[in-house]
Image 1 (tube, rainbow, N blue to C red):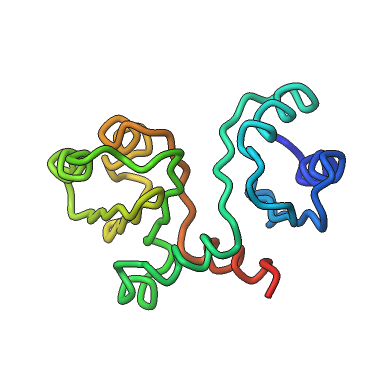
Image 2 (cartoon, one colour; image 1 turned 90 degrees about the vertical axis):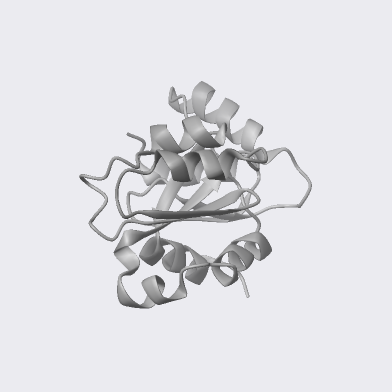
Length: 161
């Protein structure tokens, strides 16, 4: 586990402006010039400075707002936001990967993918679901991380206007 103060200090050391974190969630919001290879830089620096091997999934403010706007499950976002999860993916899955993932779903979960974002609804809860991140990554062929809708909106509130 990494203290959020250490994560913010690391971002400042890299020259990122106004680094902010959300609770002890591992989420970092900062100002940066577009076009930089930020994921690799953050992963290498975290490994070197903090001794932690982890993936980073960087989205611009515009991309974050777009993934909120593209949510294919608006009713679930209103009724049960804790069971709607946005999946930030390293890469867009190959054609056919979503169909393979849907076939692997054993419960009532629903999944959609839009480029480097996925959306999963867990109507019966996340804790006992067989739709795990490992299963999602296996079928989509890319690494990912998930945040529930409440967290997605809290992160959006940290973005610059």
